[in-house]
Length: 333
Image (tube, rainbow, N blue to C red; front, side, top):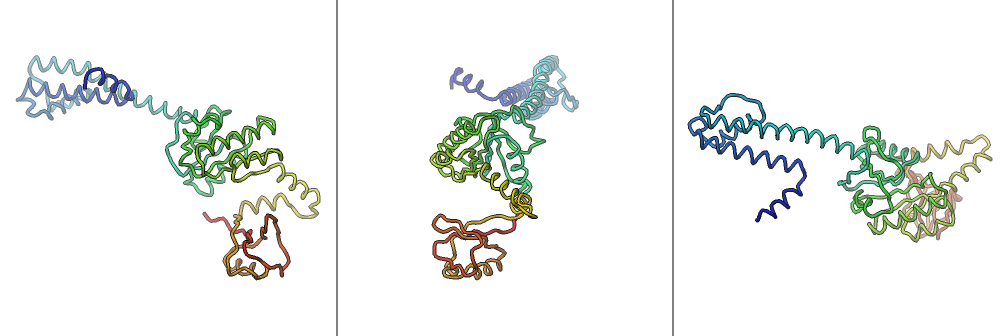
């Protein structure tokens, strides 16, 4: 290996590694030289290395001391060189730790884990979603990606923050999109509904281009962009405007009921399932299927047949092959 190749490799190393290697070489050099100069006082090279470490660190145990003028001159040189390097090395470690924490809060550090959930967009919905996910599973790993927020403290929000454009492959790869479990894309509240939908659809395209099979959940605000979101590759499309309009309609004609509180508590306590009808329930009545599923702590809410949703049909309603059963059960931690 020639000197140019060595220089090229050495100066491409991180500064902490370069400093550490330099200190190791200096300690080895001085430890070997003092052994050669004073073999009686330093019987082995390891004794010389021990003396070099203690002297360079300015600890000075005094168990090994050079006695000759040449040995003491060597010790003076070591104190001037090694001591300064060790102090600088420790300072760099502290500075790097602080810098890494700052980079984390500013969203500059790439995520290296796997099986995580990526949430795109910082808003009240995503904040509540993160809290619910962590309450449900404290060990869940969440990566938040947003380009409008400049800093986010991990102490306040225990998620890995990536500051950047979610439509850019570079930032998606920083979030380790290839090993993520799913992606949730929330609508950008800083833009009009149409512009927010366009941004969300572009994000879906970018995510799908980086991971062809990952489940993508996306918020779409306008009806005419729903098909575009499907074409882009979204698996689940949430329509908050439709949902809120139906809730408002229920509230207007609610009588003595409380639709909003009912739905919120239902979603908080129950998990919904869509399952293909088991063979033993084919050609049975809705009431019989409800009783059988309830014995397994599953509540039958309705069925989906040929794209049509039917909730709470009559007791005598017969279930058929290929029906999708819509059930709910208590959340399991």
